[in-house]
Image 1 (cartoon, helix red, strand yellow):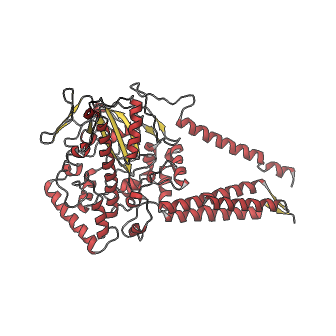
Image 2: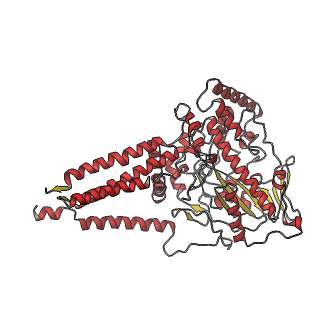
Image 3: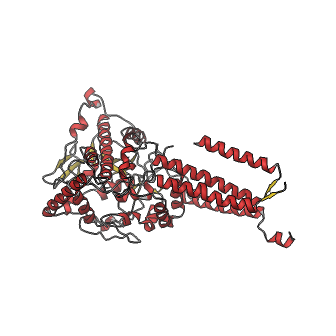
Amino acid sequence: MNLILGIAIGLGIAWLIYKTKNGWVINWFGWVLMGVSASSFVFGVDLFFGSIIEHEMRAGWMGFGLFSIVLPVVLGTIVWHYSIVRSA
Amino acid sequence: MSDRKRNNRLSRRDFLKGVGAIMGATGVASITRVNPVGAKPDRTNTNGLTTHKRKYKYPWWVKTVDKITTEVNPDIATKPPMVTFATYAQAMIPDEEWDINNSKAKEYVKEGIINNIPGRTLPDLALHYALHSDMTLGSMGSFDSPRTVKIKNHEELVTYNLHPPRDFDLDPWQASPEEASRVLEAAGIQFGASMVGFTKLNPDWIYPYVKFEPGITEPVMDIKNMSFRIPESYKYVVLLITQGPRDLLIRNQSELGAAGDRATYSRMFNAGVQMARFIKGLDYGYAELLAAGPIIPFALEAGLGELGRMNRLINPIFGGNIRITGFLTDLPLAPDKPIDFGLQEFCKTCKICASECPAGALSMADEPYWIPANAFQASGKKVYFEDNLKCAKYITERGNYCSTCLSVCPWSKQDKAALHEIAKVTSVIVPSSGNFLSDMDQAFGYGLIREDDPEMEDWWDLDIPEEGIDSYQGKA
């Protein structure tokens, strides 16, 4: 699980670097919000897989939905609309 | 953008400064709480003895303290009239009511089997009865509970096929107290204990009928005359806690939950017998602590946890998913120190054990108090005294042992998701967060699995580890 998570985050960072080198300018709070989103996503995934082992799937789905989907989507939307200046 | 507008905005430098200041303050606050600035960890106890260097280390947010966190006053302490050779339920409930309750329990059990009620089916009941141990046979966890606990002589189990050094004309094992504690801890964990702790005998906790005598070499129990004579040299106490199968225990208030409770006691009993054999194998003596005094105060002094609202031991790693056993011995041992992880403040606002107690036996008071609920409780301690008669009636009328209060405790979580560690650290740094954290606990769907919950019978399909225990809890 950690390997897959690491690859996913690595691909995300690579994509961001590619975009910033090709016209995107992201302001400082955009980076902060993306950091919070990424942490929240990882936290939700950890809770989900941890809950599978603990046999607490209600908590697992709840945490995954909240921390890995809802919060990153909300923060991502804010970043998408207010933090990225696309010059191209 | 104008200069004025630019000046009104929060700059990146100011933002980072603010974040840094908050993180720094939080760090300093937490470090100060755990280990006051300038203070080195104290490795001696009040008797000047070097304390046991625990192999199984607690996390950074558990601090060691000089005295237990429950307020006690031996000067105003009274001992209950009848506290052993019978469980408290057996002592409190009158004879005629005992028989009525057993009849009710038999009907209750039969109803579960006939109607295939989830958690009370025949396989569930068989699992409950199968997991009894020699120790729990005869306790109130079944509808044919005897009026008094059958005291079994475990001497045969402890001494069978055992050859202490005296059999080879050799002296008993010699070691420093620190070495002895180190060896007993390692052995105890091998025997199935989750943690092992040590303390010195505190006479304040000992039952009135127990006498320490210089002229005897072995403990002598006389049930008929209610006396327990123990050699005066038995000044040291070893305690073992064993964890229970969480997947069964969260199905409390059912036969499956009772099976979890009995399984925890069975593990405790097995580890205890093996520890007694080990002590005897080193050629030292032992006496069962359970027959000499209430075991929890000794566990508090040995740093195995704090006393929770439900008046049971709560360990910072395993929460309430534990049972305790212990022995008095003449093998000199280095004691542990009591611990503090903020539970006293946490319990003031959490109250989840009291609100979930099916018998309504636990106190919902905001603060602990000195007045016992009835004459069967010892005074001299400031706790949330429970109505243990209600608890006893609930159990005896159903024939299965309830430990809901321990299972729903927010500290009783496993440690596979980081969320639990974050919640524990939060409760230590912000002790008044008990109410918020227990609300979050319920919002996330933690808590008991009940009869009407479709997950109840799913236990039979779960992929569980051996004995349902995660032996790496808190270690990895």
